[in-house]
Image 1 (cartoon, rainbow, N blue to C red):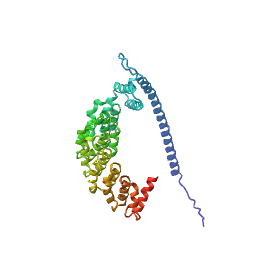
Image 2: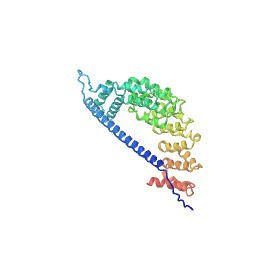
Image 3: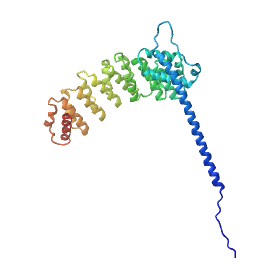
Image 4: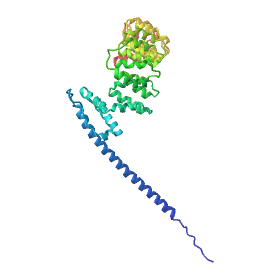
Length: 361
């Protein structure tokens, strides 16, 4: 009888193939890293060359003084100026420099921007189909104060893309101040609260205004236009639109009412507090709290009886706000807390105690 030995035989070829595969993959990764490093060094070298060329030109332009005879000259390689990437890098550097300068150097930078026809580059961007390129073009024209393109920019204040129209609106206000808000006559899209704040930040002249325009915007069907008009009326302390602002307290939009109250907190003839109270019962909780806060600033003893009634509101937050305002307007001040019929009962006891502690702090 023969004994047979069975040995496990392993085919080595698949393992060798797998080894070659990983070896090839490592070589590819190594080559990619080498190529990427080479490309990165090349870009850095090019960027450094560009920086030196541009900084030299900008330095000369900043200190240039016009003598009426010679014109500003720039020594920039024509081949470089044909490179779109270089041109964009140059534009970015001019804008960066302008943001940190003022006076004659700024004027010189604008001349350089136009001399190299960078304004055409920016104008071309605003005709792009891509929203981010369009927005960047508007921003460049705005910063470089290219007022000659205002018509093209004005058309974009109603653009379907929010960022594009925001940039266009800011550009107009940057160009003309209050007059730049003329886009409010045609705007159909809502203007966000953040955008309204941004627009107000572009205002530097608090004297020039047009009450008739404000009245027109306060009657707009676009609620955000009404809100912005109220902000503008407060910014310019425009008393001429006081009656229109009072009417805004009847507006169905909460934000409109709140901004109207902010205006009335600044501009408040003697009977303003009573006019505000007339709208109290028709307002929601947020507006009621805002009314009570405004009364604390502009109210007087005539509103004491109204405030005493609010101490019995079902909402404890209303009770607290009313008590705070009473402590300012009541002839007895915070001492009236001790004379209140339910001063020793909660929630009035806790409310009165909290107000006393806040004022003591």
